[in-house]
Amino acid sequence: DGGYEAENCFEGMVNLEEVELPRDFLAGQHSTYRMFAGCKNLRKLNTADLDMSQVNNADEMFYDCGKLKTIDTSDWDVG
Image (cartoon, rainbow, N blue to C red):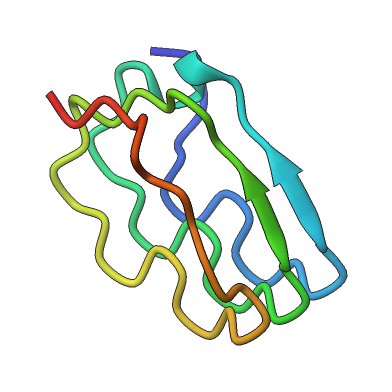
């Protein structure tokens, strides 16, 4: 555990436009619920090789992120 909760961690950050997450950002996390919800200006998410292998709840992870059009999940570790 990285000492933080991924759940809701960026929620409501309306000025957030781009995020780059290291591979181990979600290590030990079981929920990404509403992680980026309400990030209305989020346009780019750099998450190559993101480790999602222990996440079992990703509900509404990108809720109300209307400017985020595509997310490349091809290299995500979903274990």
